[in-house]
Length: 580
Image (cartoon, rainbow, N blue to C red; front, side):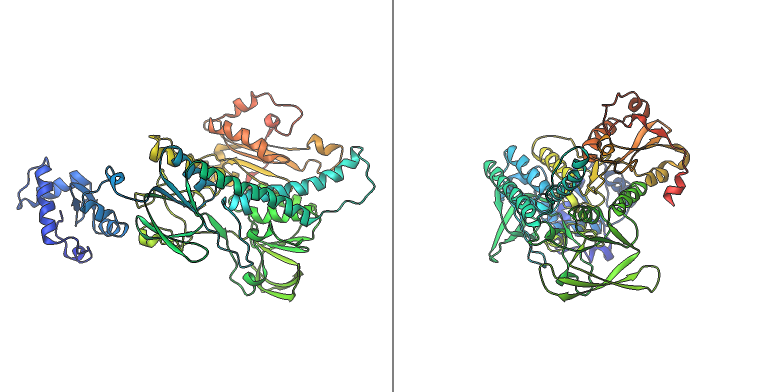
């Protein structure tokens, strides 16, 4: 049923013929509880408002289902739901349609794999498509996504390598005697790390096979709302259809778009399988990836410089971020602040070679130059949504960042297409979040569950040389939300027992909690010290349960550990000194 509006009707596809409109009019009016006469315009408008809550025209119904106005009708035409309605198909009978699969997951990272295996466990026919486009340096990897291959796993193992180097220095103070010089072998570490990753890749493939999930190593893109084209590395194209889709394509490192960046620089996609020691390294960026990589490279004994455009760890508590950065600087990492590179030139080819970096101040016209063996770009990541045919499926994407807006059930604007993981607008870019969202999504779709992924109070850790764990609000955000007068900060410097005999980093570790004075609940937890992930995980569970300061004070600590934060004292400092 359409109420006339010439300017809008001109934009509505030709599927709405005069014959179709007449049919839908009679079907709606027969079923409507409100009496109608063609001349009663006022009653008609009141009836529509009551039925739909929509005052504007046109007001479109198909088979007694309200579609909406012009924009929503055009969107329904693009995403294929209009044609399904016209053919009598609804959400309830969609499963009766003939498709190759119940579910196709695009992306074989942590979230995609978790979702696909859970859906298969619930009896559905599932396909996973995953394809890694090589970096400009030619680096590629196996099944498992960023975390397993070029993210969390190799990062933590190389961070551990650096910690072992520090432990060797501490060992002498604890009585260990060894005369031979100790040095690090990059090739040995790289081979061991990559062998372990290879075993994980194989394990994922076996797990998919055991659960009867069809894994296809091919690049997927939509050609229709329910149909994709899969292109393998030999450029062979195959087409598949599915009732539902889950997008789990993740992100890839962003380049600088300056002369020489793609030709001569590497990213974290290349670093962990680099066949040679990177030597003197410039890390461009201040993200957690930049500081983590710069930190463990320095821990291996390399000459490392970090070039920072503005602040460290944007989005994290800046007090904590600066303390982590200060610790790195005290242990030999150099920082170039408020400069950005404008050109990268190759001075000498090699493994490593020699590069010249030209950078410009963000505040003045000052130009500086430096020479390095390796330049690592870590300035953020781009969502892999641009070239998967989302326009053909009608999926709405934020044009500024490629992120996909979803509702609280990870559903896009196209009802049968969902998205999880790093590509979501405004959600955490963390592996455990993607895994949780993927599992819960599959259970809601196929297991009659109603449980949704909770994106609040997610604990995380930045594996800088002095690790930083956090859960809840940064101090700046707490002030913004609740007001300076309504929060209390409890904090303490501490010296881990393990550091005392080695006589290092005296009172450089730091913990603080942020409390909402209105209800005394802990709204932020921040910890800078060893084993930050292990410490923070427990506090994350407590914050999920709504822990208060009194409950925290009443908890007996395990002694002697770094997690004895019940000894935190009330803050006397001026918060604004930290914020500004």
